[in-house]
Length: 116
Ligand code: FES
Image: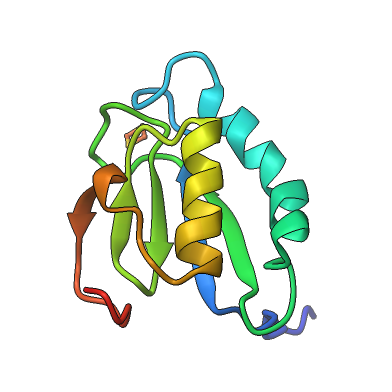
């Protein structure tokens, strides 16, 4: 008989959700972006420690326009048009610096970010 094992998760400061669904980007840009995150997080020093960011792919946020689309939780911030250059801004300004990138935000929802 199988024992149900409780999953484990490392601590993290923020969780980045990346939509890799077929409607907000059509050419696989979001998946390509997701695949760069490991190196980018490491270079920015947010792959471990107090600012560690967990990353997860999702398949639709039901806001299927102008992707790649990402969400940063628990800050309750949703970004659109996350090109590689815009991703670098989000990493440096928001995830490292703590200041959301206002011109790329399309939605805010509650959360604990001091700038909400
Ligand atoms: S497919 Fe990405 S938001 Fe719907």
